Length: 194
Image (tube, rainbow, N blue to C red; front, side, top):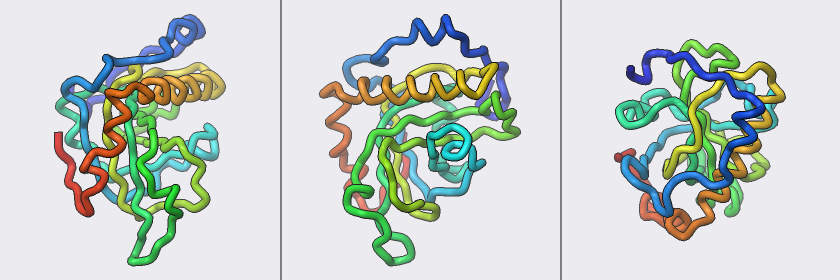
């Protein structure tokens, strides 16, 4: 089954949440990781920040195509960097232009019954400005869990908060930290690659 077909999602339960590990993945990324994506930040559904307290940045649909042959719907972790410039003007601070930890939901978001596949990226930093239209680079380094459906918004929020903690702890290992200074983030015009 390809990513174009919406699979049935398991339901996130209390017992599932209680068994979640604090750290996921091997000591350093294994194939198919790292997966590199880039593109201009698009407006999404507007739910992340408003509904869930977890603002997300969305890449254009064609930017997520490279993942479709090597991954499944779920939650991933890695690093992201947003260009400080937009339309030739410096908009974001130096801090906001750094390579920062991120979590990404790739899937159909069954709780919201999406009609199309999306990749929603939450960069773990408090931005002072929005960055719609800015170029963003994303390096996916590992998999956290499968996409789930939820019986309540509160259960979804609880899993999102756990995803963030797991991502930070997983990225704190030396085999992952070194990717923050990867040449992908230094190149002015880096193209997605697998």
